[in-house]
Every structure is written in structure tokens, then in C-alpha cells.
Length: 335
Image (cartoon, rainbow, N blue to C red; front, side, top):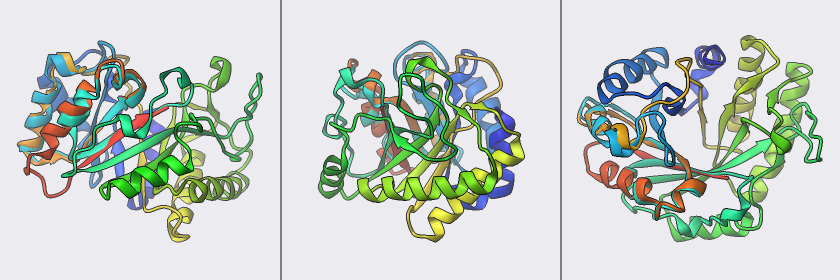
């Protein structure tokens, strides 16, 4: 899976704006390992990219906030290595009052996820720091049918997020209220309805790209979105085919002025876990920030954060809002 992201980056890194490294998929981490090994490895692998430090807002995997995530983040920022923070996900963060969203924001990316409509997470639930660039990511747009037995559609994407609470009107409203807010959609994900793997399975590069450009242009313009995030986790194609499909898709959408930014979310190959907030994630980010290496933070996800009062979102924004970087991003992921 990591090979897919690296191949895409090597061929089309010039059109990709952010790399949302999924550190929470690694085995449970220490602050030192997060900062000195994993993050540096990613910086070298995706040289020239804006690398986001990512954590999951609910659970005990990766480097949790309570175990040193923000300390690590401060160190990465001090070293000039942190481009931003990605929080997975806003739906979960809502349970925590979006605590970590406030602390992470400078560039904060917050995921809002599709299959958790019981959470009823809204854009307005998530706290937004006016001193950062805040990106909401709607997850997911998937090229599968929405039937009880989903099947692949070769690049014809449909919306799988909560369209009632996260519709076109709500997108326009939150953007009009906050000039620092951008909204994107994420492609793929782990599973589609019924727990079936969401597999990248194009019939051909040209047909997949043509269908994807057409279907996504309609969705992006209807919802007044700004960018796309690539989050495929299962593949029935070789790395070259994946790179060509995604690279040509991003290039075409940018050339057509449909999107202004794109990010990728390569999976780690080190197992499952990563550096969770309670294990030192923020400690690691503080270190990265102090080094000038923190671009932003990616939080997964708003659904989980809701029950935590968005604790991690608040904490992330507080860290990123400190004028240590010239440009930082916050991204929150919604289902």
C-alpha cells in the first residue's frame, strides 16, 4: 500500500499539495520514534511535500494526545518539519467537544465520515480558530454503487457522506461565515456499505480518468468544494496504474480550475497503531513545530471527536495557532 503512494508522489508530486501520512496505522509509537524516525522517513520519502502529522481522536493507537502527540508536534514544528495536523475524525471528536481541534489548528484537516449519520455532526459543531487555515474533508466519494451489494463503477463517483447535515447549503454557509475555511472531499476509504472493501479497480487508465473527472466535477461544483484527498486502502491494480489514474485526475481537475488543492493519504507499512494523543502525539508535534517542520495536523475523525467534546481539535488549534510557522493548515475529517 505504501508503494502506491510513493509511486504516485514520484510521478505526480508536483500537483499534490499535502501528504496526510497515516501515522495512526503504525504500531504504538513513542514521541522519539514519531519525531526522529517515522516523520523523518516520510519527509525523505515525500521530499518537497507539505507533510501533515495525523492522529486518531478516539482510541489508543499511534501516538495519542495524552501520551505525547502534542509534545512531538511541537518538536517537529520547532525543527521546521511540520506542515500541518490531520485529525481523524470530526465525528468522533464531537464527543470530546473538539478539544484537540482548538489546539491543533494552524493548518487543521478534519475528516467528516459518511456512515455515522447517527452522530449528526455538523460543520458548526467544530471549533474554528480564525488564525489558521481550516480544511474540512467530507468522506467519502466512492466509485461504487450504493446498493445493498455494492459493485465498482470504474471512476463514476457518488456521495457517501451525510448529505442531510453536510449538503451544498451547509458548505456554502460555513465558508461564508469563515474566510479561512476550505472544504474538500476524500476519495475511496477502507470499506463501502456492508463492510465490503472499497477497492481501486479501474478497467483502464483512460476510461477511469474520464469517468472520474466527469463525475467529480459535478459533485465538486454542486457542493462548492475546493479540493480532493486520496485515501484508497485496497487495490486491484499495480502502482503505475494507480499513479497514472490519480495523477491525471488531479492534473485535469486543477487545469480545469475545478480544485485548488489536492492531498494524498499513504498508508504506513509498519503495522497498526501509531502515536496516539495520550502516548505523546502532541509532544512529537511540538518538537516538529519547534524545528519548523510542521505544516499541519490531520485529525481522524469528527465523528469520534464529538463525544470527546472535540478535545483534540481544540488542542491542535492551540498549538498550530502559535505564530511559529509562516503557513499552517488544519484539516478535520467528517463522515
